[in-house]
Amino acid sequence: MQVKQGDSILISKIPSLLESSRSFIYNTTLFVEVKVTPVIIDTADFNVLVEVKERWYIFPIPVFQLADRSFNEWIKKYDADLNRVSYGIKFYHLNVSGRKDQFSFMLINGFTRNISFDYKAPYSNPALSEGVTFGAGLVQTRSIPYQTDNKNNIIYFKNDDFVKNEWNINASYILRKGLKKKEIFSVAFHHIKVDDSILTQFYNPGFFNSKSSDKNFPELEYKLQFTDVDNI
Image (cartoon, rainbow, N blue to C red; front, side):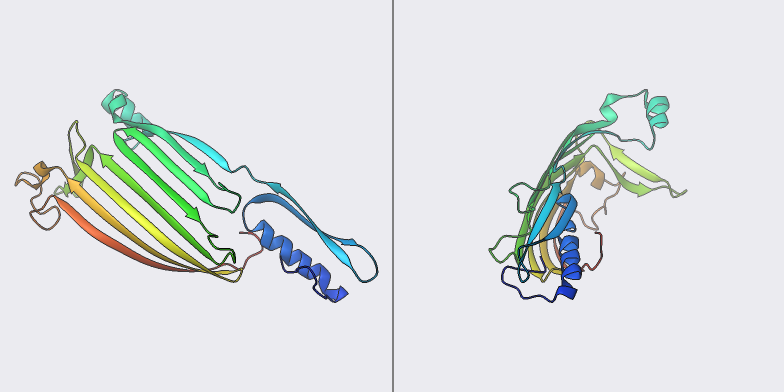
C-alpha cells in the first residue's frame, strides 16, 4: 500500500496513490481481482476499502512424457514401449501459509526418475524485507549422449538400468529493497555420476575430461531484479 493509517494526503493525490496501491497489490500475483476504494467518513477523514479475489494456489499436474522426439516415433520405431515413458506428478502450492511462500514437489518415474522439492519464503522477517529459498533433487536417466558420429548425429549410451545419476542441493537469500527491487544470492552443489562402462575405450574415456566417472561442482549466482510495470 502507498498509504497508511494517519497519513495526511492532498485530495488531488488520492486517486493516483490508491491506483498505485491497487497495482502493487495486484502485482503480488496472489489475486485475480483487486479493488481499492476510498470510503468517506467526514470532510477530513476517509477509510480505504480493499477488496480482493484470490487466485487458485494449488496445482497438481500429471506427467506423461516420452523419451522420444515425437509420438509417431514412439509408436512406429518402438511399438509404444511403455518402458520409454516417464510418468508421475508435479505439485505446486503458491501460497502455503498466506505469506506468498511457495512449495513445489516433483515425483516422476519410468524412463527417467526425478524426485525433487523447492520451498520459497519471500518474506521471512517481520519487516518483509528478507526471504529464503531451499531445495534438493535427484535425477536419474537410462540414456545419455556420450559422443557424436562423423555426421554430427548424437550417439546415446543406454541400458535397462539408470546410466546417469545426479543430485543437487540449493539455497538462496533474498534481500528486498523497496517494492520494486530485489537482490538474490544463491548457492548450489551438484554431484553427477555416470555408468563406468561409458569410460571404456569403446565409448568415451574422456567423458568428464578425466578418468573419473563422477563430477562434483558448486554453483554461485547473483541476481538483481527490478520490476516497474503495471501488470507483472
